[in-house]
Length: 185
Image 1 (cartoon, rainbow, N blue to C red):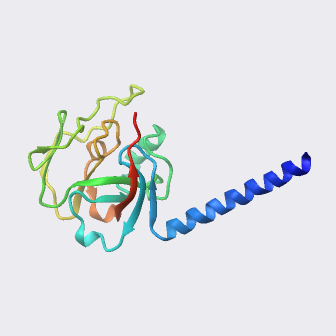
Image 2: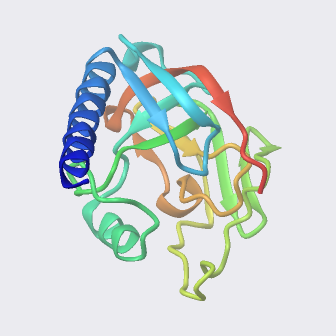
Image 3: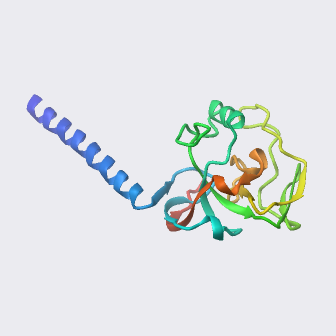
């Protein structure tokens, strides 16, 4: 029995090592897994040469937060720790607006060029009752080096309605969905 347990343990370690190697290989091939709630869960592929051709509607991988806001987001578990300069995980978001677009963020929600973004009204507090960061009211036409990153129809997502505008340089990759799915809540 003990011998069997050791073999199974060895197989478990081998399985974990094989899994880690597979994940590393997929990552180096440009595969990104989305397991968060602000975008459809699934497998995405990095597209190269993104910064010159960033468009509204693109799904991107970004490190958009300054360190003080990232510290708050990490402390409240809105974000996980990760490799970004602010020590947070990279975010997968949709580019809602690019340079030249008129953005308005108010208590009623986000609008781009006078069209409302779905489910974007900022919450006053998070589910634990803590006050959310406030970047509104904001009304302006974006500079060419700015973008607004939002989630896809996720009222509880931590996105541009809370962290504001993002510098284009903080967008790391454009992503293309390979296989996505919606989880029923």
